[in-house]
Image (cartoon, rainbow, N blue to C red; front, side, top):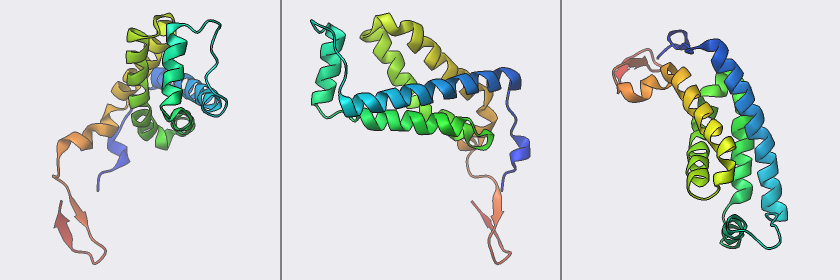
Length: 152
């Protein structure tokens, strides 16, 4: 079985700072997003094109509450060093979706969306040693409970 000792974090001081800020961002915006899921999306008078898009998502039953819940869970897990690599992967689909959203729909939020995606991408780079076994293939052998050895 692979050891955690072989897994390091690149740029550990920067990774820690970015991880903490990203975790705070995810938890805060996750709670806010869950509020939108419960109370509805706030719109201006008259509704802008962006407001109309968000209202259309709401009417389709888009799972905005669960998106917020996922962000909150990922952000919370990011505070714990052992679960941070998993939390970063959990946040990646959200961060990529936000990147596309701010590029194509909500240009006024580029100042939030670009750093959001950049933080996730940087953290994936910093924690890449944790993900390397995913790409390496089944080469190690493991011991079963009876003491025998089985190739993966």
